[in-house]
Length: 125
Image (cartoon, rainbow, N blue to C red; front, side, top):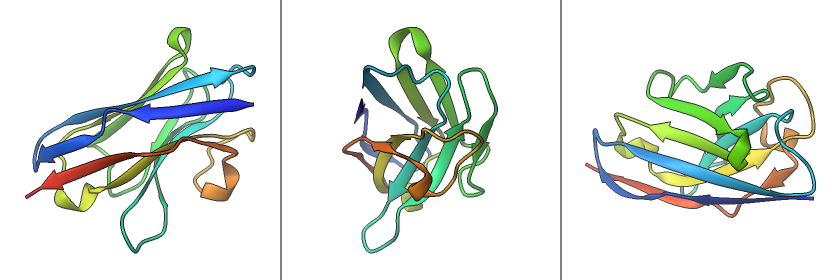
């Protein structure tokens, strides 16, 4: 089993930055697992934001955040991060960290097996 806990959300002005963190624990090492970040705004479906296929492997992003957000990992600390720059009001959502037992570069939420509880990000215009 894998447990994921996100933190680092909050209120930020448009144009500002936040770094989300996801702490992973459990009996399984995540270094070879795809890890991703998703978000869900009120009334909308959960959407893919960023992913990393394996530690040191390729990263991939949704078009809406490409060039502004960066996903990274620290395997020694069992942490995954999402650096968010140039934030916009439309980035407001609950952000979730997720881990997949599948390979490749999953983007769909049903391709991920473990989820955190989410952390709120609010971008004020």
